[in-house]
Length: 302
Image 1 (cartoon, one colour):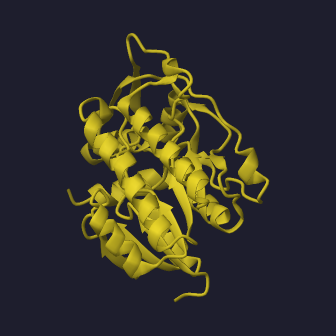
Image 2 (image 1 turned 135 degrees about the vertical axis):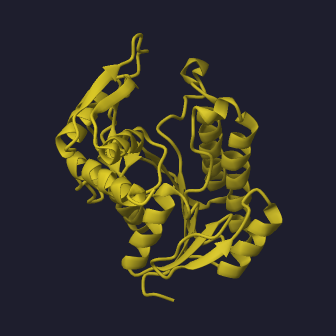
């Protein structure tokens, strides 16, 4: 076992999970990456295949690994698709979390756990704030984690990350925009970035800053607390497109939506975790540069 302890990372094959495996391995942890299928292993981490919606498989995993830390990143993370697959979103986010925290309660109760919630969670006292089945599933996930913390005195922390961006396989808007640019560059011709809600705003945070925040919380975070993980700044999508224009040799036209919906998110200053010594370090231009370079490399032979 490495000096800093054994950490189980669920959802290791996903966008945030892959960055978390790399970060915690390089930081000196004994990393066990859990997921449904095989994941690439450039960091020489151990891999454990587990279906988190199967309680017996989850029990076996926890009994075998006996982690000191758990970073629970697995789940359904697409708000738009949740409208078509609400039960899948609920099963992936709610049932898997229930099985995981209850297995830890029974088998490994001293483990310190981070559960990744969402900035899209709604206020249960105000149903008007419910925006999608995804929002429902993440809110219920958090309620289960907090309830097990309270009822069984478990060591659980909730994080609510903002829109995470950076190099890697992602369905986020910044990656989608980069893919358009790479296609134009490959064709060596100017083009359009169509149907963009240029006034929509988001708090974008580099995923590598987020996983560094998770380690600080595993070491210093207070049991039962909810921590916003964000940059504390908002950018409109026109700003993002403009930065991409400056990074590409191919000019492209930004075509706004004809009837854009009101789509503004507020920046939540990450005051609680900044009080523990964390702050975001990666500038958004660096994040977008790395996204674009990743997509160029990934599509160069396609």
